[in-house]
Length: 308
Image (cartoon, rainbow, N blue to C red; front, side, top):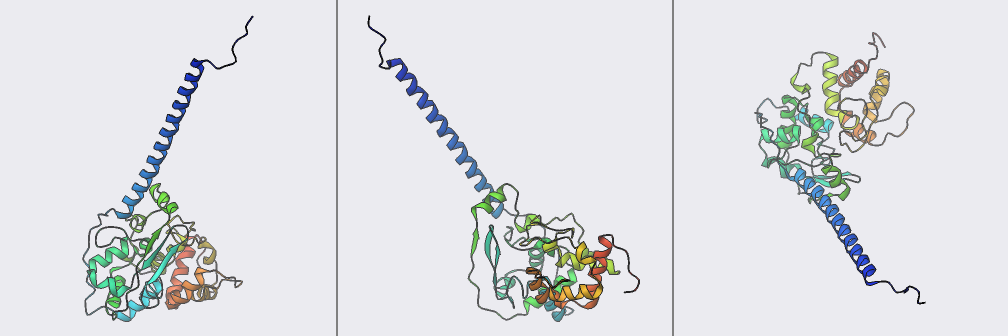
């Protein structure tokens, strides 16, 4: 008796061949879908980088005799466009957010003359450039509350500067940042600004609370969040910062020392805060620092102080 053949039948070979082709087609389809998804994400990111933002221009005139150029320079240092992102005297600098991007903060004398006062106001407050696209690296959500008076003084100061050598421009955005941008986990400057929030500079500042609220909004919110309760990149800042309820508990002399030197109780190194304090906050007056402290104490529910 002859047993069954050990050779595979022709039918089995055909079935295996069909199965292989089906698996190959499925794998190809999956790869196509994945690649299409990645391409869509990168296209979305590119659209967000280049799209225009419909922010209307509002009247502002910094070319007036009443502009205070000395105050404009002081404010420029406090908010950081002078002795900050754009270099010691606006000559240009580099802004880097690790894992996200590196971009030139341009030489101000090469940019400011090309903008009208209303266009500069929109750029500073909303992060929207002349062509309607968003700036990258600007902390416009911090500048959004600026009053017209302060903005006029800042712009008037910047317009008075003599031309400087133009810093070479560059812009580099990581793949990870583009994916986060597409997924809404990171935003360009214009998308960070919430125009539904009150613009404190347009409201009365007659009390210590109101004055301190305004000053804290245009200085502290960059690192500590627009709600001053701490920030871990929720506002796309370069460095997260703790809740300001901590320093609101400082005594007046301790708070002034911190704001001018960046040195907290105990003397530990606060990193970026030290640089910002020495180059920017050191130009705040005693009264302004006291107003910020008064606001933070009230905002975080600490009791009023009668005499210290």
